[in-house]
Length: 54
Image (cartoon, rainbow, N blue to C red):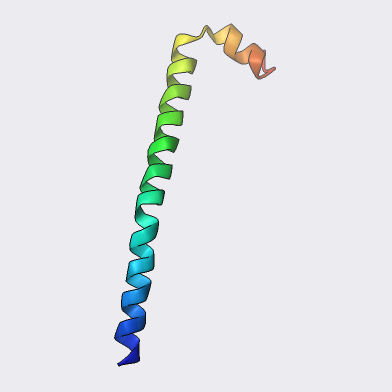
């Protein structure tokens, strides 16, 4: 009788993490999109100079 109760508690804990994880992945995707937009819109020389690769 103990195992199902423990499994239910673990399931509840996992459910509590789900919104935080989805928010984190959404913000990471948004940051990646912003970076891709910056690299597409900025001239290559400026991007390379900012990373000291030129």
